[in-house]
Image 1 (tube, helix red, strand yellow):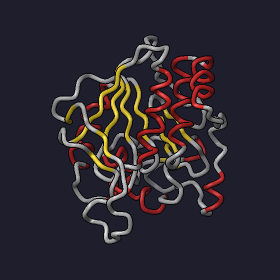
Image 2: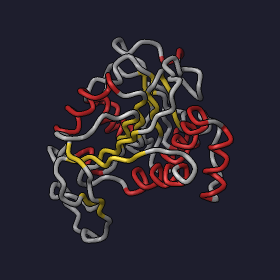
Image 3: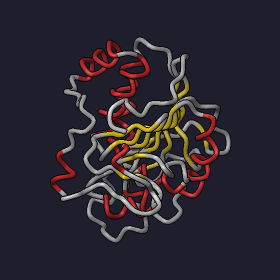
Image 4: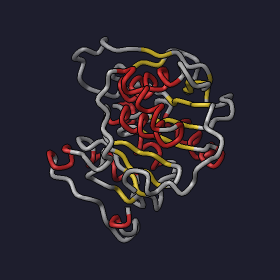
Length: 244
């Protein structure tokens, strides 16, 4: 559902333990955009971060070996995981980014998909950014749910979720305790919207102003669906998208 209409599963106690999944070829802003919003929130709110990957080795945004283009292949950033999928602590919020790595065979995704499937029943909230929704869909978590994803990568992402109610014209979508965003920069908007809902509007304003970020507050305001000529996905297995 757009905005907050679909939040049927809320929690009286604000979340404390945030987990960010990373994998080779993650999109930098998918990770660092939401994390920076949470960094600002952490100035005044007690929260904790766990960065989770297949191993404790540094994880890079660089194009991984399955890509064919060598252009700028050495330009990228790395992040150091704090935990692996095998030893990650209990989490309240699980965040899944997108990026070229979501299209990679293996590269830690099998473990990530299994981790999402295992942990979703125990978390308070799940947030995906960009093509991260495709990873979540492969875990089966989005079956029967309303969700959105990156519009430029729409055609290659939505087949991963044939039972998902894919919403094209959306900056972000909420369905119960699941939040999915459109591409890349939309991860900042969905994170601030999440902060507004869970920690209060005053905190969201404080975070956005602290970042000097002009936040999008209308979840349906998405020019990129029109840019790429996209429409909602309806088929016999995913139900009516009109209910989103």
